[in-house]
Image 1 (spheres, helix red, strand yellow):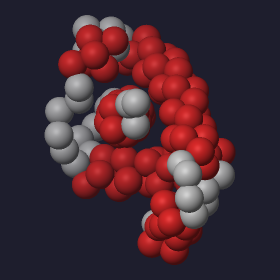
Image 2 (tube, rainbow, N blue to C red):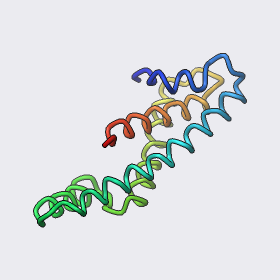
Image 3 (cartoon, one colour):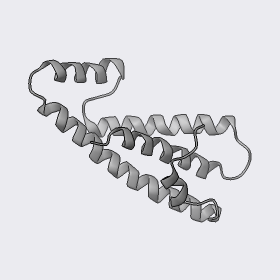
Amino acid sequence: MAPLPAPATQLCPDAFSTVAQTRCLETALKASDRQLDQALTRVAQEARQVPGATYKTLWRESLTNFYRTSTDPLMQEEAFRANRRAVCADAMSVGFQGTGYGSSILRCELALTLTLLDKLKP
């Protein structure tokens, strides 16, 4: 797995106790999910405002047919969170090495969300 972006690593340092680190990661993940909701809503609004039907049709068909999701930002976020959890759980189970499993999954989920947020920047 790729290393976490620097801000996530600094946000919940390894020096924290396991409990404190888990709480910190849960708080950071909730905050990043709120940012993701806003970013997906902004992208959907921008897509709907593009003049003409061609882009809107390609956007809608790409999301619904190719990516098997929705043009509804709330449904996109829900699908992303479910897939994110599954990917991180699978990845962590492969390398499971004792304690810290839960915080490792949270750290993975946070990294994936921050990466997506970076891609959705205006």
